[in-house]
Length: 220
Image 1 (spheres, rainbow, N blue to C red):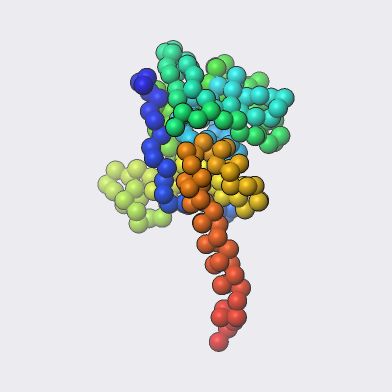
Image 2 (image 1 turned 45 degrees about the vertical axis):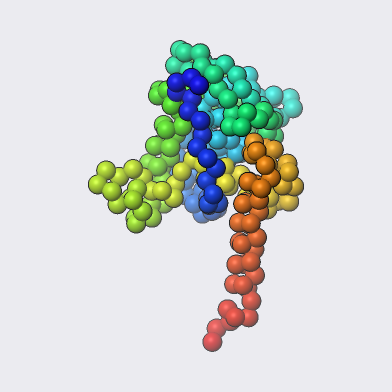
């Protein structure tokens, strides 16, 4: 495995998507670079290491797809081998809004790069996370009680992290009735049982909504 392209850690067993309010607060404080990175993460559900290795040549513009696969990629002047988790290649559909954002980004990217989101450091996902933690603080999303918020050297709230965009992507598509096998393929999961976590989270949301709307919530 090449230096700098660390494997993504195991899938987080806790499904915790961003709420609409949290995302609105994030968009309100982001600069253009941050907005484009997080819109990309939200729109495609890719892991941080996959985003760090994503190249312009991975985009199938006419088909509206973004390809994820094993490849050799140039990062900080070094050719490195990138392998997606579990080794699965896949195509993820991109919305026309996202494709238009990427077309504009490619046209204006300075300096030009083969990577869509190049970073200064070799390990891109660490840079993405640190930046998002700062954005979360600016957006007022810090919980104030977790170790990340209360430690002497604050590392940023544990409730704000890159993989949470992936959770949001999965839950959004499942709520919109995309079948679970398709969502599992888009996420690059090794089995549908992993994707079932997201379905269970949505069922829990629906149950809470029904309980809150029921007669037990009427004023006493």
